Image 1 (spheres, rainbow, N blue to C red):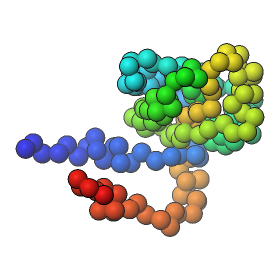
Image 2: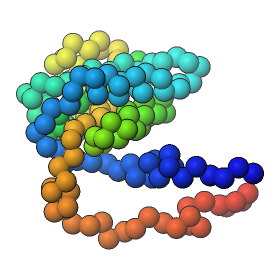
Image 3: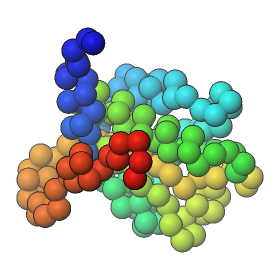
Length: 171
């Protein structure tokens, strides 16, 4: 049996939902690199039902925040996922997670957020998304505001131990 390569596993374990960003812009090459990671996400039957709208307009990001996706308001860039209504939500979530991993690989923070209430329908009107598509999930990305993160209260609930998370052969 070969030894476990801890470096990529440690990278994956460090991925956290980051909601505090600096005002620094994210460079175009970084955005494109993140999009490439998302583009190569596997999908059921290789249908590739997800498209992405890259949003940098501060007014639009603020509106997304008002529709319930609060981290979008202060992120440098927001990637809005647009999918055909019949597409699997599982595929949508896979793309979102991969975009977050791409952001982390670029040294950026990110989080997945969803539009609420009138947001999913209103964003289609605002951005010209066809009515038969779904737009509710987004990935907010930016440079991590380290000081703001340190100022947040610590979550009192630690991760469950592996013995409570995984069951072997039977529940």
